[in-house]
Amino acid sequence: MSDATEVFQPLQVDDPPMVAGYRLAARLGAGGMGRVYLSHTQGGRPVAIKVVRPELADDQEFRRRFRREVESARRVRGAYTAELIDADADGTPPWLATLYVPGPSLTEAVARRGPLPVPAVLWLMAGVAEALEAIHGAGIVHRDLKPSNVLLAADGPRVIDFGISLAADATSHTATGFAVGTPHFMAPEQALAGEVTGATDVFALGQTAAFAALGRPLYGEGPAATVLYRIVHEAPDLSPLPERLRPLIARCLAADAADRVTLAEIVEWCRQRLDGDADAGAGPVVWREVMGPEVTVPSPVRTPTRVLHSAPLVVSRPQPTVPDARRTRRRRPALITTAVVTAAALLLTGLVWTLPDARDGFRDWVAGAPSTPGPKESEGSSAPQAPSATASTPGAGDGTSDGSQTSPTASWSPSAVPHPLQRLDAKSSLSFDEPVQREDRKGDIRFDCKDVGCALDSDSSVFVQLFGASGASLDECRLLLASADRHRWPLAAAANGSQICVKHSSGDIALLVIQTKSTALPELAFLQLDMTIWRAAA
Image (tube, rainbow, N blue to C red; front, side, top):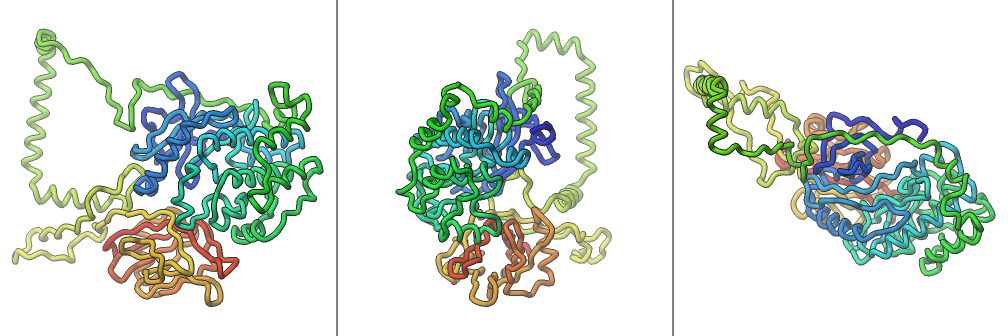
């Protein structure tokens, strides 16, 4: 936090200048759900704008969950939470705005100065416990509490990012067996895709506090599956923790959720050990040292008008009365002359540019466009259209079309259909047909760890993995799959974020992006991945 450039990044070419009337001043970061930007309210108060990724925005089930989460988050009011002030779950794309907290995340603070002193950890635990009380009081379980979701403000911590939180009675994730959260800070029941309650957040609070005190995750580093195994099957080694913190953190990390300490007990326990500092109205000096120097927030970006719901910038002007209009026309005859000349030029141009030329020109323009939808494009309401017939070669005496004359770049680009958060294990499979997710092994893509190592397997499709790339396009998959012939793809070299192109015998192409790879225990192995399909694209 010592340098503003570490926090506020300039907008990139693919960043929108405005979201729903909020003029964007800088990029704050990106995560699994989307990008985060700095903006300001009309009164100049800084806010954080989170914009949902396009592939998630096109999924109606995600929109339904997101809408429900926003409605629940509006009820959260707490001194140690970043308040939700605005949102649009039906926007294109969906977005939400929370108050911006001018302070480093716990992850950044520990990386800069190392483990926190015991008094700062006690302040941290008390503040986060109060925040969770407010969140749980609104019927929400955070589900992803971790150091990067705790910001250190001048007057205490702030819990942020309810992006994957669900109302406490929601069952969509647990019903499908998904384990939502960050592996290093999950509770045992969460790692096993069991029932998630407020006690799950208490376990994560204990892990977050241990990270603050140790400067590293309590359950160690390594692959996610290895860490999850330790969380589920091993008792944590608390001996490296400061002695004053061990009893409370131990109660937070009880294996049985029913044995964990309550949030109210955490607050009281911390207050007793902070003595007089707890009633001082602000954190101790050591807390301010942990925060580091304050960073100046960029000023609001000035704009002539506020635009609602991502509409183009339109400045309305009152229409003149009839007498005013007549006087205007008399005073500006040159404008009328210019308009007539321009219209005539456009008419002549339209006569010269014949219909075949227009058709070919449009087709060439499309061929030069990106093969996959950009961040501002939607999936579209109609099915992909077949490529148009190639125009006849000029001057051909027989009047027939010569398909060989078609430009090699004029390839048809079908729409990308996203299917986020699909799960593959020994009992399920994925299909190119609807529904994509199958609870049997009859789909086109299967996952198993029966042989040496784990692999993707298919009778009807071929695989190829991309290395050293991100955000693969349809054209890249087409190129790599042109000579692909492997129906089984080992996953030894695959990790979270790895991309695998798949071509079905029907001509459909898919891109698989691994989000979670858990293969340490073959009998419990699974993949969680995003799947994007282009129909008849080969």
